[in-house]
Image (cartoon, rainbow, N blue to C red; front, side):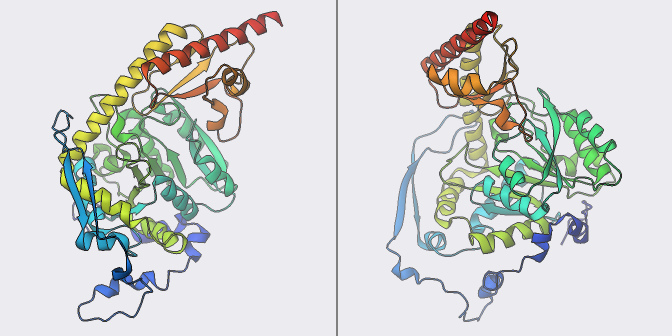
Length: 448
C-alpha cells in the first residue's frame, strides 16, 4: 500500500522508458515461482536446489572491528559467527534481489540516510557490485542507438556499456561544482524537434570519478527540475557518497525528489540510485544495491534471474552478520572514520602537489572520493595521453590520461591520479617524478 503523503508516478509511466529488450524479456520459469515455496502447507517439487546436508560448511567464525563510537573510533574487536539458518540461506540458491535480512537492513539504511520509507512506490535490489546493476539498468532502459545524457568527464567503466549498445553519448559539462545545469538545459532546449529526446541522464553527484567534484545543492535542484520538465530519468551513481569530506552534505537526488520544497506538486519516481559497499567495507565482496521505482527494479531483477541468478549469497550473509552487529549508527560512524582517513590522504597529496606542481598543473581539490583531476600546463600540448602513458611511465609513475573519461574519445590535457593506497613517501616521490616529466615536456616544446 502506497504512503498517502507521497504522490508516486503510476506503473504505466515507466513503459516508454523500458528498452525493447526489457519489454521482451520472459520471466525465469523457476525463479518467478520461488515465493510460492513459502506458502504454508505447500510441498515444493519446484527447484533443483542441492540438499544442504551435502554442503561441507558448518559455520564461519571471523573477527571484525567492534561497532565504532560516534566519533569514528573502533572499540575492541568482536568475534562473529555465521551459522545455522542464516548460513544455510547464504549457501543455498536465494532470492534474485538479495537475501531478505540484508535487503531489510538496506531498506532501513535508505530510510535513515535518505528519508525514503517503504510503500512509496520504490524497491531495492542487491547486485554483484554496483557495476553489475549499472550494466543491467542500461540494458533495461536503452535501445541500440538511443541518445543518453552523460556527465562529462565520466566514470570510464560506463563508457563501454553505452558504447556496446551504440548509444549516442551526449556529454553534459561538469566543473568543480559538479554537473552543469546550464549545459544540460542548453542541450535539451536546443534538441532537434525531429529526434526523440534522451530518456536517461547518468551522473555521479559525490566525488565524481574522475574529477572528485561534488554537485552543489543548487545544481541538484536544477537538474531534478529539468528531469521533470523534459521527462527523463536520473541514474544517480553514488559510490563515494559516504566518502564526503565536508560538513554540510547536500541531499541525494533520491532524497530530494521526496523532500525538497521545490518538489511540491510533483510525483516521485524519476531517480534510480546506485550504492556500493566496495569503498567502505570490502571491494572483493562485490555487493552493491539499487533503489528506485519498483517497475524498473523488477526489470533489473528479471535480467539477473536469467543472467547470474542472484548475487553471491555467502558474501551477503557475511555482510549482514557484520552490519547487524554494528547497527545503522555503527555503520554510519564507520563511514565517517573512512571519510576522515581519505580526507587525510587527500590533504597529504595536495600538499605534495603544491610543493612540486604549482605552476605546472591546475587543479581543484576534491570534496569526496579517491582522485585528483588536474590539467597539465604544457605549451602546445592539449593531450595528456603521450605524456602520461609514455614519458611519465618511463620515469616510474603511472596515472590515467583524461581522454579515457571522455565518452566521445576527444583529446584531454587532464590526468586522473588516485591517492587511496599510497604512503606519504610514495606520494612525494610520485609527484617529484611527475614534475620532472612535465619539465622535460616543456623543455622539449621550447627547443622545437
